Amino acid sequence: MHAHDVYDYAIVRVMPRVEREEFINAGVIVSCQRSGYLQAAIALDEARLLALDPQVDLQLVYRHLGSIVAICAGVPEAGPIGQLPYRARFHWLTAKRSSMIQTSPVHTGLCTDAGSALERIMARMVLPLGSAPR
Image 1: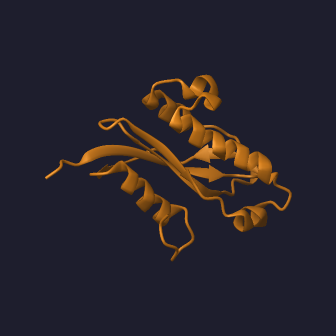
Image 2: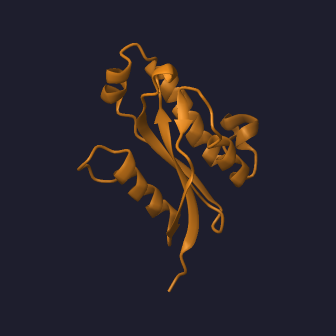
């Protein structure tokens, strides 16, 4: 039987008008130190976002959300942040900020597979209720 691994996760939030403090959940970042896992999943509900701010720049939002995925993957397009060790990338991504893209506080869980944990958190916290996990 495989022992459970400790993982950390944060919900990615889009807050189109920071001064109003209204946001929608748009993704999840999961990091598992034991396995060296760092990955983000994104699923932006454009209709919900546009309900908060009909003038939001969707291309800008997608560009910023895409950078989170790139930083997690450590690809060259992620720039200097993407080249940091994976735990440093996780901490940089989850640092408190007052910008359009924010993360929740970091939470901790136990899993036998960090990828499955990412899917479960996405289904529970981001995807529309009743939809199947991807």
